[in-house]
Length: 407
Image (cartoon, rainbow, N blue to C red; front, side, top):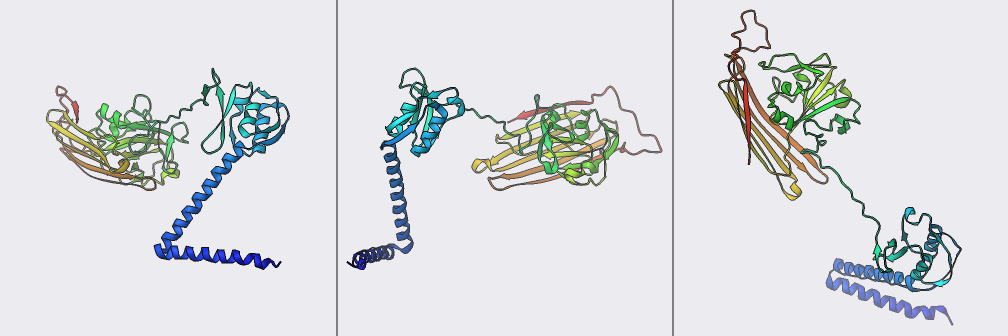
């Protein structure tokens, strides 16, 4: 008989099926019909795979596995049975198997191989098998030991965490190297935290750097400018980088109320963040602005200095949106009155805001500040031909405060 006579009914059946499918697509929308058919096909395939896995687990198969180490016997059985068997080498170390001869199902074969070993193979939902230890009775099974993973959250702004005591950090921002631990940094770095700034009542960068024995101020405390020697080399205000960019810090003095970290890098830093405008080879000073933490913050601090100088500092931080993606941090400072030298007036006004967004694929930050620092009665960073003025009165208190109120 001609084979075409057998193919004719199949072709007619195929045309009927194709026309029915097209009619279904036209009646319910082409995209909807195709999508429905695809879902049915995927579901049928998944059901077929599940049925095949169940059939493999129950069907009998002939095995001839010789006696030897339990690990070798299990590996060979897994290959011949076509199953995924999970276990570690430590689980089967020192154990042997009598082998497997005859026809067995997957579970039956595993039970024979594991007899007397104190282990049991349990089938998982995805069809694989997990090797576990049997404790006590035959029905008591203990899984592999739980592995605990711990990590330390970074500080606000994704900075390295603080060291014990929270006065200095365990690392710093090293330009193109990013956050680097002090033990991994190719330079000598010290990162002073906001907690140290608050505890020591520091008002300027020079006040913070007084903690470093290799850094020495080259101007008096009453000066409207800042300058230091790092390892004996001069580093003026132009060597201070704000959030990694030189020239962004105030040209005179930099107030630290809006600063999260004051980092000192000793040695040439051009490789990491580019050439510093002043060209100092002793090192660089980096200011890291404050960022909003996950916990809401409202802090008001008041301070008193000398006999007439009063000040106030307001610090507010909030995060909004899904997963606290948006953050805002505001710092405002107002200080006015007579300075540490009698007859010298100082007035400081600072408003700084830091905005940031931290998403899964996008992160950005914006920092803006306005600082006005006015000195009346002479600048003692400048040498005068005449008398420099009256000496400070030692009977007057130099500084009291600040007192902080957290809300």
